[in-house]
Length: 245
Ligand code: NI
Image (tube, rainbow, N blue to C red):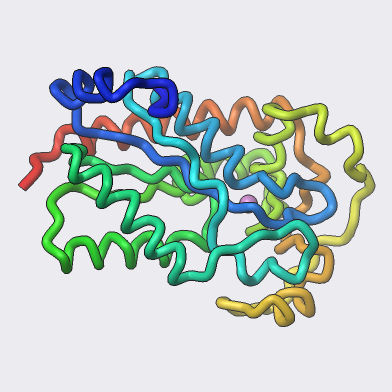
């Protein structure tokens, strides 16, 4: 159920039955030497598309770029400013609600996006736009965090996590042939957020945040992806039951 593969006639027919659409959102940012620059959008897209397939729900094209200013000191990172992301999300949601979509659910793979997406939602409500606007960050789901603790104990960390790296390894194993395998120390500096790109590099010189991405395995990725899909399907069922005011 990909929006990009439909005609407007098919979208008209969909809107007679349903008013929900999923929008995957991620980032293009460093994920340490072990992980892919596309990690956050690759994970969010795979989860959203699987949920869409199983529930017959439309999935919009992925917003690949996100708010990654703190990672911009590392090569390959491409960031939007926080306010650009607010505008981008606002314009996309506005387009969809003008056409009759009323439940607009962002499936998010990157923590840095959350504040901007929520400000966009608040601004849309300030402008009196009707509908349910939600962001579900798969990595913040309690069920996922419990699973990560079972598998990786205290080494999942907060960025370039073995959890997200496992999912991308499961989806794109060939991209890992050139990535390092050796273990490093897992440091836990007493940091703070937000951080500028210079501050980030001082605190986390190889890009990891308290994580051991070398623990990533395809089989874990398959498990975590399946659990994220299962839990998000439950959330979507709840959102679908709500009355639009
Ligand atoms: Ni990530």
